Image 1 (tube, helix red, strand yellow):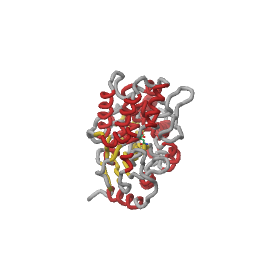
Image 2: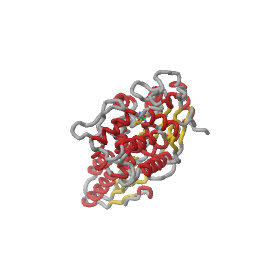
Image 3: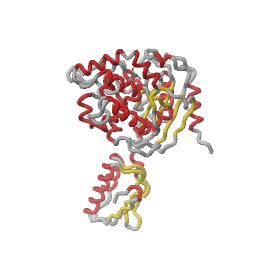
Image 4: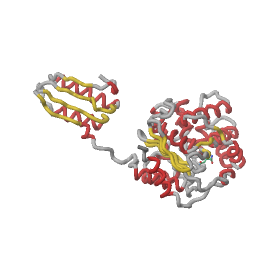
Length: 400
Ligand code: GLN
């Protein structure tokens, strides 16, 4: 049997491909030369395999999609407090290249708009790095997210620097108000090199899947960033990733995402998949027009909206019966807060002193920290009630 997923992806491209809405970005001369008809999609699972369709081998520059990854590296290297000191987490509701600083603190509002990304780039690596060393650390970090060595497209880099007046102005602005202390021109060069890394949709899907997987790259197995860094980054993507279309995007697609002016979009659905899409024509917000259509379609077809309510926690009880005076409680699936609370309510109905209890966790797939602590407390209280409690724990859970 051949998996139907690539066929499905091709069908989505066929359905969404006809539109010629939008226009290729032309404020970077080299991007204006892009073939507007290119179209590709890739979906990376958290177990390694990546499915794709369309122009999946065509490379383009990552542009603003580099921003969440540089943010993740800055968080990893400098810690949350230091990064928050210099860059906020509030949506700006403005265009990506807006001059948008918080009036009271002077910080850029978030790391997804250019001014915030320029400051964020200055926070990648150890504080003492030279700009060249920081460029190398950025390249190495983004390559770890992609599970392959990425390279700068020097032609796009040179082209963007020739017309980078606005970004240079933003660099001077943050240097002028003391948010950064270094040469603003070299800083904007470093940021622009970061934006000029060449990727294809498969790279984007793997990079997104690494965030969706709590920071562990599903292809290389490397923990690129800690789980809290991945969570912080996805949260900022959810609120600020699509610029002033963020609200429309989040309600209709419901996946933390980031777009770039070369026509790429990533989506990262926590615990499920990473998406990469490419189509160069942009809508008025600077997001890939057909890319947005494709993501809406994938989200709808595959039930990927993060706000869609998951299955009810009552399914956690697989079996509850009394056999020869012994209460058998067999659980299944994932034990998080709501599931554990349901289990505790079932335990509450067991009469004190009514005989032994068997808690069978063999079919439990996953226990988070709070779920585990609640279940342990339930067992302790059953024992205080005079029950002899036996717990069957499968090896993969590793809890006693
Ligand atoms: N390098 C581009 C810029 O700074 C990135 C913008 C984008 O992709 N939205 O203008």
